[in-house]
Length: 476
Image (spheres, rainbow, N blue to C red):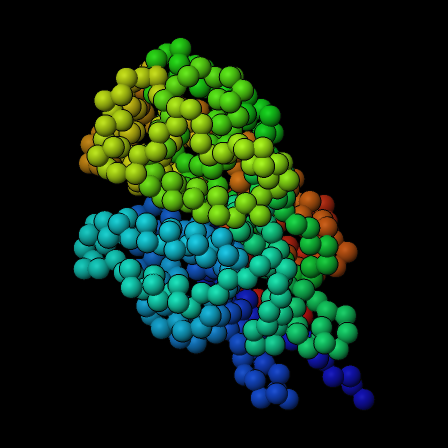
């Protein structure tokens, strides 16, 4: 008699984060347990904005390729907009299920989603839409559906067990592990589906390192830096120190566009160290980002999630995000007055890709002078203003004006909060004995293709980089 196959079938559809770094959105359709009368369960992993170009922005207005009301739950890896930015739209269009994430991710997501309303309203006007893709009431409704979990606090949705592990990417970022609840109860050997989310560039000086997963059967892995290596932190710290020293010598302005979550806190942490140890001259440093200021307050709320070194510094009385010379500019009028302050000075402002936020005004003011420096510490998507400047464009369009680029353009790769090629391979290699298939996502085509080939060559694992809309079936 043929043995009954008790494996749970899962269809995975890739509706974002394919052949690009933004728009992460994956739909799981899980077969129910016929004996219990449970039907198919639909779970989303992430629901992010497409970012970087006008084409990407237009995709955000498109209908979802599935019925939001048919989705039972949404799992969120972390609070960057390319992972959470369309959640209010999902709710607006009929989603009524539960949203799950860690506690910091829930707090950060509310900040990010409300902050992005202004940008979305501008986009809507530019595209002649009457309204943006969501309003503040949609954010509030989404938050009412949101349930936070601790790391390693397991919970069940429709016959599968969910567990969040620390991804080490930003505070609260999570790796999602999914197993069959029934197999767990019976003691049978279980298979595991793992969503890496964005993996961290560990070890970080502030948050804990990425937790290892050593028994994944199937993996959906990011590939933002899947075809390159980062410089190490010591080199990155030294380059930041020398760049600041150089701007003081030139009596110029140093602009650092940085994402409000993690990158800004990482830069503040390092400048704090440089200032307190007398390694850089006294200089005014403006944190010109209301979102970064609010996000830093959330960081202070979750000291329990810091690594041991950062906790010990706080116990000794060190405020990791405050130091002599730091000026916080919450209001627009305060931001405008920065231009009146004589250089040398440093301006840290959002957005990291230079596609919006206060950094755009500073670029307009300071790019035309050779005395100034633009320092990139973040990833920039293809088509973004930051990417154009990084790639050497000498004349850029900012707020309807052609701005000549005379300022020095510098890049520090070591501050990336993403794992590089070696980090990604190492993470996957921990499960080399159990891996059946790896789906490589969240990277430009060259990065995802390169990483997929390395996984095949080095680990002997079946690895593919799926296209948008592609559906694959697995069994756990």
